[in-house]
Amino acid sequence: MGEAFRYKDGEFYAEEVALSKIAESVGTPCYVYSYAALKDAFTGYRDAFSDVATLICYSVKANSNLSVLKSFADLGSGFDIVSLGELIRVKRAGGDPWKVVFSGVGKTAEEMKAALEAGILFFNVESVEELGLLNEVAVGLGKKAPVALRVNPDIDPKTHPYISTGFKKSKFGIEIGKAAEVYREASGMKGIEVVAIDAHIGSQIFDLTPFTDSLKKLIALADDLSASGIKIEYIDIGGGLGISYTKDEKPPKPAEYAAVIKSVLAGKPYKLVLEPGRSLIGNAGLLLTKVIYLKDGTAKKFVIVDAAMNDLIRPAFYDSYHEILTVRESGEPEGTVDVVGPICESGDFLAKDRPFPAVDSGDLLAVLSAGAYGFVMSSNYNTRPRAPEVLVNGSSFAVARKRETYDDLLKAETD
Ligand code: LLP
Image (cartoon, rainbow, N blue to C red; front, side, top):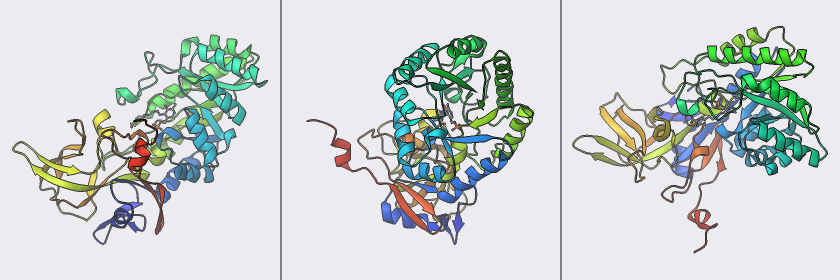
């Protein structure tokens, strides 16, 4: 997980702040993010691509907290958005609309209008019908919508099926074989200005070959289009670089990713757009939780904690592995446990059959690598208020989102 989270004098720290201090101050469960870790991840990308014209558009869906967005905006990041809500967040956090790309298969006229008025860099259009509506909306506003077609390069990213997006049969993008024809149609539309090509093949990808295979296809298409008079300025290669969820996993570093991308792009006139999410924020966050009870069944031991699948759905949804450490440094594992939450579903677990040290009720645990697709996928299932989010910077920390109250939960409802 990098340097930002580590044991110091027998206790787990986020930068220079003991996690027990955060728990005391804001309670548990609680998300904790490290500014140093997100900054390191961003500058890692920025430095790796500094010798080619590149815009890094942080993928807002991974973690859309305003403090996180502001941190990336201040570091010079652009943003990849998929909804009007995310555009509103980016603007509120001081992000530059000129550095925003807008993806997603179901953009509405309202969302298109808002993005055109904000003046975003380009729309990643995912279907012919969407292109037609965007043209209409732009003409209505007396504007031209800058457009990339999101093409589907039909590539296997070799990751979890739920987060693979570049297959022929997936709902995303326009089949690459049909793209040239759609580009020709787009270039004749009054409200459309073709500027880019885009693909995003999936998430949590460790093998660099699918990225370069996809990029080669995009370049071939961009070259053909340019030769036929349709000028392509940007190639957007999406996000998807994986992170380590265990100590043994060794995903490629941004520098290795950059090296292969740059070698494929060498000599080409296109500017690069990247949409990383998980690899910028995933290992910059953890979920802090407290043991409520221990339960020693005949077949299994359970550690029942105050965080649940409504707080972190990844284990239940994707069978994902998140490392769990005791905040007070502990010895070797003593047995195997399931770490589970209080929700009334058997799928409510954070870890299954996990070798675990001895713990007591009241002990704090840190669920690692929870900075991406953690809080943003949380819900109020079982009428549980969503957890607060805390941003640590050096020896200080600030509440980036307060814990929801029961009033917050009920205020939109009528009885
Ligand atoms: N661009 C587009 C168009 C995307 O759909 C995504 C993620 C990204 C960029 C950022 O991908 P990343 O660099 O974060 O891999 N909830 C799942 C992950 C879903 C990813 C959805 N799209 C999980 O928890 O693993």
